[in-house]
Image (cartoon, one colour):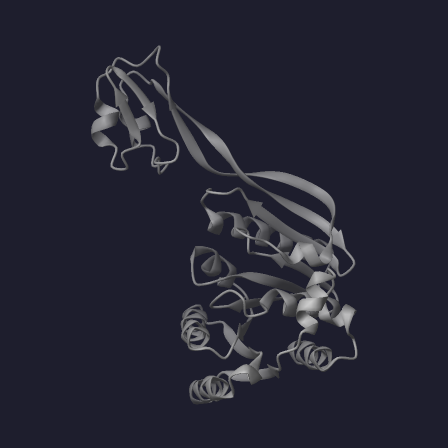
Length: 286
């Protein structure tokens, strides 16, 4: 079983559109959307939910006023200004609290309780492209890396049970914690970039991070003809550093039209130039 992650160092490169098309071209696979902060692959795939589970990403803490003796110890140790002191009453501001639990440990009266907080939810579903696992973190919640790790684990279990050959991952944009959790343990990174200076800069960071995890990387330049000068810079960088550019996709409004119609490019315009290029990419990946 091989795990393939489609990633981009920044948002807006067309990563999800490309992943959606590859989902219809690569056979015998499980699909995963690891962009748990703002998932959008499900908009195209319109999943039928088979299983829905809560995600408890961290603990929340509360002071019990009937047990609190106003000893001030919790207030003294909190480094996040989350303990609110009003006269002899103490409360915890959940938005400032970092869930470190120091106040819970030092309270001599055991007046602080902790409980797991529901931070999001994750799903196993069926789609017209196959089985699909994704998640949604609630606004303002944390531990995206933990949630990404969870759904990747579930995807691996499903793939093993169903004897799937591939796990195809739509990764999060940027270079934060969820990207690291997506990269760990994959067999191939498909880095999608665009011909802008920020696109090149973020591509370099992404490829360097993939190298750190000893993951092989290939590059797709999307919308390459909107700035051919920067496209050439990207290609030169890849050639000089041993990264294969597997495709150069020209700008095409069919990507936007397909998204509006909640379809992949392969479904919406199978005879388009973009579809032919994507088909070639899928063959090369397999």
